Structures are given as structure tokens and as C-alpha cells.
Image: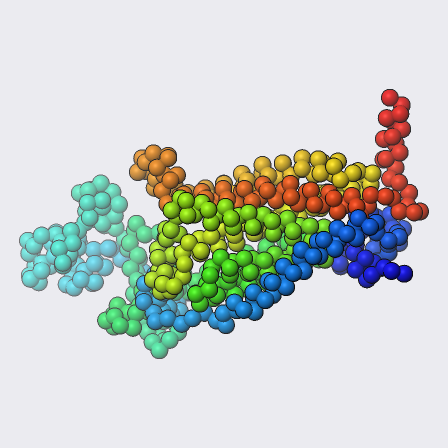
Amino acid sequence: MGRTRADQGATDEVPGTSDPAPGHAHHAAGHGGHVPGHGHAHGPPSPASARLRRLVAAVLIPFAAAVVVGLVVLWPGGTPAHPRTGVGFDQETRDGRVTRVEELPCAQADAEVFGGPADAGGPPGGNGTSGADGQPGSTAPPDHPGGIPWPPPSLGASGAPGAPGSSAAPAECHRATIEVTSGADKGRRISQLVRPGELRRFSVGQGVVLAYSPGAPEDLRYSVIDVRRGPPMLLLAGLFAVAVIVVGRLRGLTALIALAISFAVLSFFILPAILQGSDPLLVAVVGGSAIMFVALYLCHGPSARTSVAVVGTLVSLSLIGVLGSLFIGWAHLTGNTSDETGLVHALYPDIELHGLLLAGFIIGSLGVLDDVTVTQTSAVWELKQADPTMTARRLYRAGIRIGRDHIASTVNTLVLAYAGAALPLMLLFSIARRDVLDVATSEIVAEEIARTLVGSIGLVASVPVTTGLAAILAAADHGKPARGRPAPASVPAARGRHRGR
């Protein structure tokens, strides 16, 4: 009598798993495992536990309602249209397939491109080839039409990398014949020349992405900009999914579902809403919060420990937002540090780049925050399960020691992840022999440093916040052993050893 459904069902297991909840392990063992839907409780929770549960609900329910309202109000309804510029990613594309690849001397390929037959000597217009006037033996200078010198100073006489003027064998180029497989020109064939110094190579049957410029001359409308990577990427995604499910089982499956939902929120809400002109910071807060609620409760179940992790994540995200806004303004970070950002701003001038930068801070920190808050909450509950006599103070001290180790490894991970992604940029700065301080304070690097440090401060703050709240709630939930439940054998043994001393 007097017990609510929420009190009866407020257990700490993840629905659908075979792992018994902390504090109920002996009951699951006595029945050969946990029975789904069997919410057995050893008497009503203490008044402190009920108050704390109400407090957590009082924080989360209004916030969840606000997130739902934000999704409805800010829902974009699709990406806004714009006229194509033909620049960068904003190009029309067509599909293509490589039908033939042949080797030929680069001089011959150049002769075919620029006109006139090629002799064995070199490029058209000189060095033993037909001259600009078309007469054999012309002594015209060894230039391409238009005055472009051949070979370039960095290449040898053959057009291959080497010392200028070297007498190496003529370089072999590759010419790929590509068939257009989509659009109005389906079936048309074009050629793509690959020089020895280029990294890209083609193979027969390979799919490619063609940039299409309808306003260009007919023979210049198509050019290869990328290759199709569908099969290897799909195989890699499949291996990832199999590994997650095999190791994580049902928990791994729910994690993959949460990942799909997160990607859907990002693709169908966050990105289109920003393009529609909504405040990027507000969109990031609403979308990120929706991702957090779905991911945590779907993966870890609607329990007290999950709610503690959600609260800890919210507090840390708030801190990241405040610090990010402060230092973006103080350090004069514009957010316009790449060609892609500049193109987005040119196509949609109403997008506020400072807000977009801050939104990136928040969304980028969300995943690692979830990891830390969930780990800290689970650690505190497991500590309480191992020793039900532990007080909130002892739980906090033990949990914070675990958190310090987690902080040390995670912060290092964040820094190394950025260093790995920015390795080519760091090499360029090293080649330029610029001072380390100059490199660190240049906007393109300072932006990433600020992103990493602001996210790391939020990460560090999440540990004491989440650990403290989890310790209070865990101590209140299991502070007194239930009637009829034997104390763990380790506790009396420890006490006996203490008295023996």
C-alpha cells in the first residue's frame, strides 16, 4: 500500500540483459537468472531514496519536455535549396565507370591533348617534335602552347620526377577511358590522364564520381573528382556491427540502434535547421540533448544510474557552452578556417559562424561525456554492490579515484586524436620552420586547441559532479541491507580480521 509503480519498477538493470541489477544478484542466482519483468523488491525504498528520485525527475522531466518542444519548433522540414555554384562540394555530379586503362608516353599524351603528332623526343612544339608551325625539325622553344614550360623545373626532361635535365627514360602516363553511367549523357566516354607523380590510379571496372559543368564547353564538362568506395566502406561497417553485437550482445545491438538514431538527428534536424537560419547554438543544444536522452536510456535502460549520468552530462555540457562562448569571443576566433566553412557561409550568409563553431564544441564533446558519466555511475553502483555498508563519502572517494584514472587516459586520447587528424597541417608548419607559439596561436590551430581544452574541462568537471550524485543516490538506495538478505561474506570476514588485529 502506498507504493507507486515507479518505486516498484525503479531497479537498476538494463531491460533485456541477463545481468542482475546491483543489490539483487543473490535473488537472480536463486532463480537461475533474472526473470524478465519480475521487479522483486525487498521492502520499500528509504525516504531519502524517494526524495532523490523525485529530485532527479524534477530536473529531467522538464528538460526532456523542453527538448521535445525545441524539436517541434525548430524542425526544418528539409534542406533549403540554392543555385549551384560549381565550386568545391557544391557541384553537380554524375556516376562513371572505368572501361579501359592504357599506358603511353607522357609526351605522346601531351601531343594528343595540345595538337600535332608526337615524335620520340618530348612534348609538342620542340625537342625533336613537330613545331608550332607544323613543319618537321622546327626549332621552336620547348614550350606547351600558351607559354607553359616543359618540363617543369622540378621534373626531368622526360616529365618524370627527377633532376632537371636528366636523361632518364621517357615517363609513362596512364590514360583511363571512363563511361558516364548516369544523367542525360549516359553512355558518353571521356578520357582522364594520370601522370607519374599523381597518387590516384584507376582500374578497369572501377566506379568514379564525375563533376558535371553544364555551362562549360562540351569536351570540358566532365572531370573525375573522386572514386566510389561503397563496397569496402560497407564491409568495414558490417565488420564493426558484427564485432559490437558479438561482444556486446543485446547491449551492443541497442548501441547500434542509438548510433543510427543519432545520425538521423544530425542529418535530418541539426544540419538542415542550421542551414535554414536557426541559431546554431540553440540547434546544437536541442539536437545534442535529444541524442543524449535516446542514446543513454536506450543503451542503459531507464534507471536511477542512467538518470544520474544524464544529469552529469547536462551539467558538463552547460559548462562547455559557457566556456566556449567566452573564449571564442576573447580569442577572436571567427570559425572561418577552411574552404568548406567559407563556401557554406558564401551559400548561406545568414549562418552565424561563431555559433556554428560553438555548436561544434558541444556536439564534439557529447560522445566522450556520455562515456565518462556512464562509467563513473556504474563504478559507484558496483562499489556499493561489493560493500553495501559503504557510505556516500566512502563511495565518492573510491569513485573519484577511478575517475582520476579515467580523466588521465581520456584527455590524452582527445589530444592525440586531434594531433593525428591534423598531422599534415603540423608537417606544413614544421616545414615552414615557424615558432611553436606562432603555430599554436594561429587561428586554424587555436580553434582546435580551444575545442580540445574546453571539451576537456567539461570532461574533468563531469567526474566529480556525476560521482557525487551517484554516491548520494547509491548510498540512499542500498544503505540498509534488506530484511532476509544475508550480508556479503567479505564484509564479516573483513570485520573479523579487523577485530583480530
